[in-house]
Amino acid sequence: MILYFSATGNCKYVAQQIALAVNDDAVSILDTAASDASAVTGIISPAYAWGIPSIVENYLKCNKISKKNNYLFFAATYGTSPGQSHYFANKTLKNTSGIEFDAYYSVKMPDTWTPVFNLSDKNKVAAINADAEPEIKTILAMIRERRRGNYMAHRLPAIARIVYRPYYHHMRQTKKFIVRDTCTGCGLCALKCPIQAIEIRKNRPVWIKDRCVMCLGCLHRCPEFAIQYGSCTQKHGQYRNPHVSV
Ligand SMILES: Cc1cc2nc3c(=O)[nH]c(=O)nc-3n(C[C@H](O)[C@H](O)[C@H](O)COP(=O)(O)O)c2cc1C
Ligand code: SF4
Ligand code: SF4
Image (tube, rainbow, N blue to C red):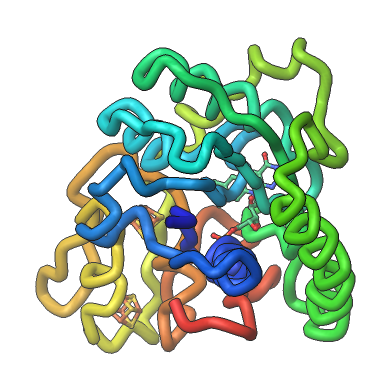
């Protein structure tokens, strides 16, 4: 089982491509079927704040993974640098399950942290996704060969580890979400939030937790693009991977 977490589809797409190549299943971490940790052969996660999303860390903390077929890999999709995401994934895996990943891979894809990165130019976004295709093909060939080692591109030196926890903690504050008047109260944001951080009250989303995963799935999936985070996301556009539904 290739396990993934994906808010906007990049990791879902990569997981599906790998699963197809190695004749395995791609399963979302949110799917109850994912609780069979003994079947996990690889984990695909977005890089968040040069580390991993809280939901992936929690999965690794709460599930004992055993190495089916004696090979386990970690792959990060990322926009600018996967930082030290391999380190945090491995550390958590080792603490809980007493084993380590055999290989690490990465795929550069559109950067969904749109409070900073601009995804409004559809041609540029399409070009990034086109460039990801040969990268995906390369890593799936390496996974088929059961390569061992760290093949992540653009990762940062170990010193970058000090950034992850404070920066991600800061990023995860829900108080910066804004809802524009174009919201129709459809409820999709609340329905799809992976940790039920949103409730619909008087036809508007309300964040009921101070901090969330900050996957930005609510912002990127809203049919009206009514959810914003800070002052830049509106001009930076919405993104969903074109190959999968999320
Ligand atoms: C909260 C947050 C933090 C992020 N941090 C990083 C990062 O540290 N480095 C990076 O290259 N991309 C970062 N990204 C971009 C995502 O890792 C990237 O777009 C990923 O492909 C999204 O995967 P998904 O479409 O499966 O959700 C971040 C995105 C979010 C929402
Ligand atoms: S998905 Fe968008 S339109 Fe629907 S309730 Fe949420 S914010 Fe409003
Ligand atoms: S509130 Fe939005 S950003 Fe936070 S976890 Fe839920 S869907 Fe993701």
